[in-house]
Length: 264
Image 1 (cartoon, rainbow, N blue to C red):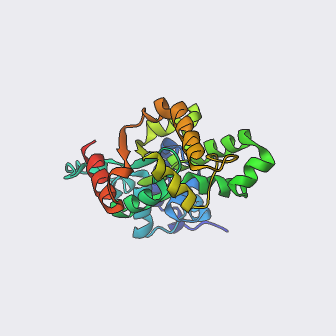
Image 2: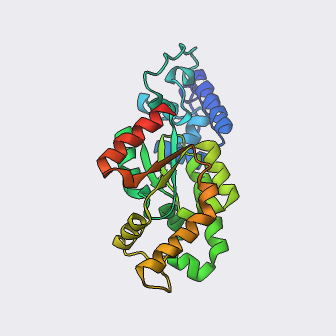
């Protein structure tokens, strides 16, 4: 289609160059930016080429994705931001680590809702990437393939330019690449619980892996759990915050953890 003079307006050309530069600096592909902003890749391509039809809402979504004032997209000098009244605004990503049954999914979902953040479970992202359930990944491809999917899922998640609460798999700390990325890009929280609470929560979910996989007594299952924790404890301890979910009910856990995060 032949471009009109209006479609190559200098403002649109300059805006396209700014968006292209900001996307490159943020390390996002056009596809990732499209997923974050919910703007089609085709529309973004036109916008970056200086021919896009730009609405105020699109500018707002792009500014949010790049974490900048809309004025910077428009090429106007932005006024200095006022200090935030709460440190909550400074927390962009919260990664919950710990053994299964510590409360990462349940507490994480509540925490995200309270903060107005998006909640993501790494396990669900792994399944989406692999096109298979976690048991199928292990059975068909093995542990090494699972770790590859896990690394890719975490890389994709931390590139999202939006506030997040991330529930991670219990063994993520044993993969140095994935854990170092979480430590560098997130406020990390080690969720702890009493052994019996771990066990009851996991069993309530109908999941017995790997605790008591071949041994059925409660004592044996707790011994398995303690053994796993012992091998990972020094890794979990690298987290920014340690928080025991057995000390409070769920609502109080949410309230107390929010306090801890705001004071970090």
